Image (cartoon, rainbow, N blue to C red; front, side, top):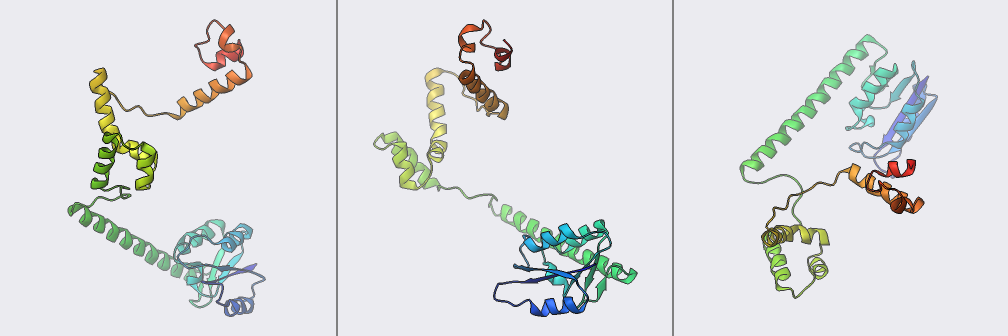
Length: 237
């Protein structure tokens, strides 16, 4: 079965030219997307791929109708499914040996383009690092703002909530700025080194399990002689 696919970039553009070409090529069904060529999300394309079966042929008016971001991926997927591909404008037909050759050339060119983009990106990052710039998300506060946060907190004239509202940040960000000073103060007061302890998912699960057991079996906390053990022991008791 010949199944067609058409795409226009905006709702204002008309797909009649593509649909007429698909009808003339003998397509029994066709799907139309309204999306930019750079977008990977194509609802109608996804629907079409789901109904394709081995021996079917996907037909497009022009190769770029598949889009720049998904072109090679879709064609590789079609090849794995045993589905042929035909582009009317480029006269590409993967059901013939010559069409397979053309497809491989296009795939190699697309891979070459991706490699060039990756190489330019890495070169740009390397040049930025050599100039002292570090990648990643920008800090919400500048160095001067962080100094002001510490100064306001030390003055004890404003609360943490007021500091957060003033700089339009969360309380967690405020405490993140203040934590080195708070930790140093606690270590000096207690004489112990405070280490960062990561909260593991298993710890969270165990706390939730203990809470559930307390709600369902409150007597387990008071009656069982080994109530310090894991909640699973309380239930079995």
